[in-house]
Length: 407
Image 1 (cartoon, rainbow, N blue to C red):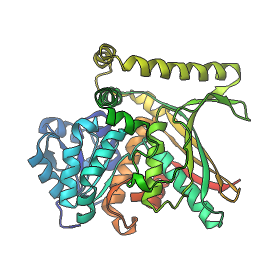
Image 2 (cartoon, helix red, strand yellow):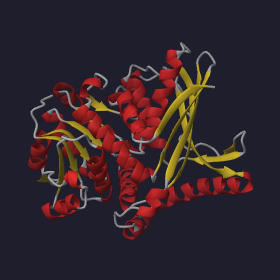
Image 3 (tube, rainbow, N blue to C red):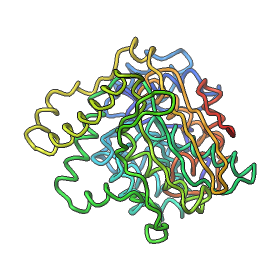
Image 4 (cartoon, rainbow, N blue to C red):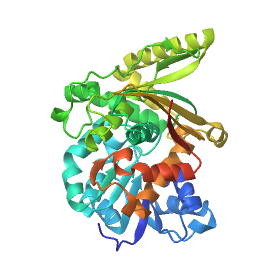
């Protein structure tokens, strides 16, 4: 990969809601001398974003580039060591940039939670990226950094103890935060793809849909994405976790990209904690029923059109909501020899926005500044396989919790 680039990091989508948060994180946390460029469709709006950042960012260059302009994206990719993008839905806007970065040997990171997009990007551009040395790292936000790095930490501890491969891993997620119109757009986009294509429906139903080599995967029966309502020993009720269908496939891709280092027979599932006692039980049943009703309703085109019109226009939660948000994921693992491990991944700030901005910002800095310490891989990657322990270290230093131990 060429180091003679004009920019260390180029942020595409800097004028969007999450893009502004990522820009602020970079302005406040990138080491002095890091060359950051803000990219987007409007020079005036980019200048407005830059002017609102700390003084350290006031000399950052502005690059006009549209996600639909292949020539502009090629120039952007050629100018930077790393391009990070917050422009979604990625199935609609993302593939041209992945192509540009793969061809230019430029590292890339995004925030996608869209399995069909990740599959398409890998199928079309993985070989090109491996040939040029580009690391194309998907899902560098709340989708799916906490779960992906949490399982990596469990593997590291079990391997250090000689405890054998991981066999069963369960994640329990809890969080408080808001929702944006961009998130709604991504969900609607996946539903619409599934409605049009039986191939997309099969992909979404396949627990190994993101595997780099589907035929090489073991015949291990994976837990269902929609985990049943149940009550834990501590009295906490669980419900299905809406992000499980994507996160679990990212974790399984990470396992395969690392030669199934976690274990050939790894079984992995995610659920959401919703409270204790009678109220917790009612909430768990309500969440389960609500997800079922929402899935059935969104399958109807007029309902999707209504939801699209009513969505919050791309804006995200206000500053107070972002500041008071939080997330915590508790992971429990059993190895093949019967030993047990636990991990905790947690952080302050709205998980989909404030915390995600930290995750993507630190992923960008890891790709730009820590290349010599990253796993020796290129191509279509995951956070664990592409950034690994380096991203864990950076996120710990940024105030998030990534801990694992035996139990």
